[in-house]
Length: 263
Ligand SMILES: NC(=O)C1=CN([C@@H]2O[C@H](COP(=O)(O)OP(=O)(O)OC[C@H]3O[C@@H](n4cnc5c(N)ncnc54)[C@H](OP(=O)(O)O)[C@@H]3O)[C@@H](O)[C@H]2O)C=CC1
Ligand SMILES: O=C(O)C1=N[C@H](C(=O)O)C[C@H](O)C1
Image (cartoon, rainbow, N blue to C red; front, side, top):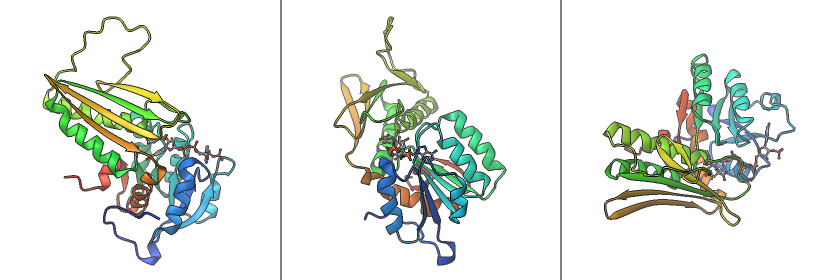
């Protein structure tokens, strides 16, 4: 089984994170269960699904929660975990600014509790988003295409939103004007969603897993930053890293890049 890609201290025995996985029977959960079970310095104490009460987390003596559920229930799960002083790693999508603000406010009342919201656990994806953000100020135009399997519940993807936010911030800080666009008429929304000034297009296609392209355009040239996740194994090292690290980072961390030394 894969292990964490970046160095992170394996805690002493008395501080071994005791992990409850919410959504253990889902596509992500089914990979995360063996990954957590086999990771040095982590103990898996509960595998929970939608039929289980959240109190089962406490009954199992968990110190950490890994949320891999659905956008509608993830905020309720996180609020329960924080209320009970449990460090929490969230992979579920749908954590927009309002939800993050609410959670940060709750965390302020529970100093010492750490929460990581990781829109993407894949180190390659996190790097692709960082590269795109770094490049964004050098190009007039930027648009994003995210492509996923058709079972995905939300659009645009959490990764696309996070990437667009990073790009938007980089362009704002550099004083880059909006991408040029002469569109006058778009009754059917063909130009996609606009997230932080970035047009985001979502594709749902049988055969795909999780893919993203950031298109950056300047006079006479294009740079494409693309990432492909072919298998959910791509996310497991990031999950293990998150679980090993979250207790040492009180408060809210948004993005696995917060735990990676990207410079
Ligand atoms: N951050 C990242 O790197 C990644 C994030 N994701 C995100 O993770 C989430 C899960 O994805 P995926 O595994 O593909 O989705 P699935 O639909 O396969 O699984 C979701 C699981 O959530 C469970 N669930 C629903 N409600 C509850 C509840 N109240 N308590 C506990 N469990 C519940 C369901 O359990 P049951 O079967 O019992 O109903 C189901 O097994 C999505 O939001 C997805 O976008 C996906 C890939 C990577
Ligand atoms: O649902 C998925 O599959 C994925 N969801 C996450 C997202 O919304 O960004 C991460 C990855 O894209 C796979």
